[in-house]
Image 1 (cartoon, rainbow, N blue to C red):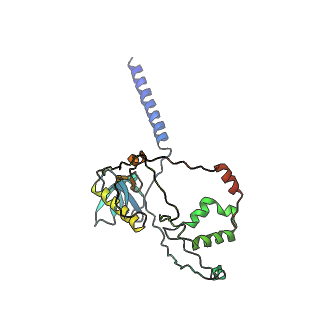
Image 2: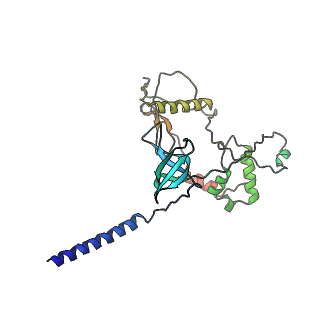
Image 3: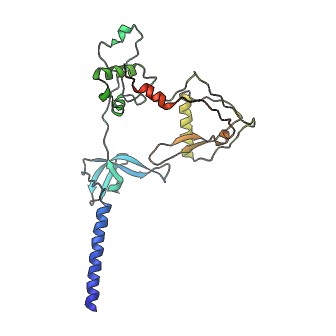
Length: 273
């Protein structure tokens, strides 16, 4: 009886060890081993945000001072005076410094068409973050497979001459005005939502930005809708306006739309000239 109990115990331990090895192999199949060199690698640290302790963000860069174990490192941040802290490897990632770029600014020339030949061959600037990224356009649209090198360069010059049209800065148009038809003449008034001091500062900064870009203007109205701040992990806060009460009093407007498939077939055979 005793021997049977010992045999069953050994078999149970062996089975448990085998299951543990299988589970660890399955759990670590997509794991990436990360290791940092002491003194030479710069890293970013995943830490809590000061304005909101419930949110985290990547801070740094910091320098690896020493390695305590396979998973723990002592990191010294640049913005702290001789202060170090222990971080797990899962809270660290390599920091890659971006190469510096020099922007070349060229004023638009308003001369005869012969003067637009660009005899010096100076390319138009495309490094401005508020302007399109032409290299990204080439990569995403696979232009190299459909256009020749000279046609791509002509497209680059064409977009460069009209940078304001393709800018990433939002704007507005004066060609069309949109009218909203209401079902009732009773004004819609909604009180503002309660926000923290941090959220209020973000909303004020966004309103000032839209005023500077002349997207909005200061006015007076009997209709009020609250402004809210939509926050998501890993993304910048996005200000929005809660128009749900106003939308419930708007008369729906319907416009005839063309056949989309017909429009796509019409432009499918078009080529860049």
